[in-house]
Length: 130
Image (cartoon, rainbow, N blue to C red; front, side, top):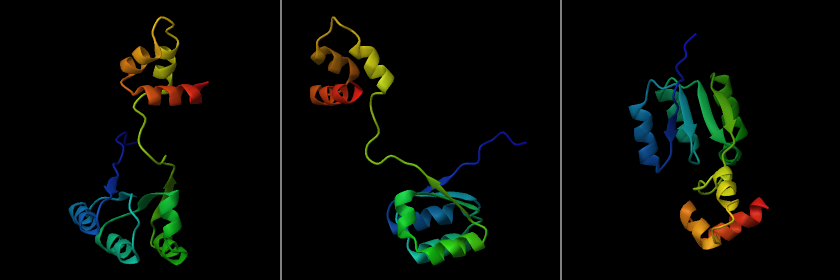
């Protein structure tokens, strides 16, 4: 059994950037679609590559017509819906936050400085943790 993970090519950005990425990765079998596709883009992806798996989020799945999804499945493309959280990534993990929060001798301002976040963000996170 092959222990190497097959990588996914991310398709995001403007249409010309996505088309360029497809041209560069003609032998890739797995693509992660991070932009709303048009029917022509999906057809080009299907014709130009050896795609067998397409990773998409729920939001993007809703924008693709059902007949296009059916055509992709008939041609052997497995569609995998990925859960992705919207918005920016957290800069501080909950465990790290709780660790600093437990330090009694520090003021809230000092705790926020140690975490590298603003005081307002510190208060918002404190509200959500408790």
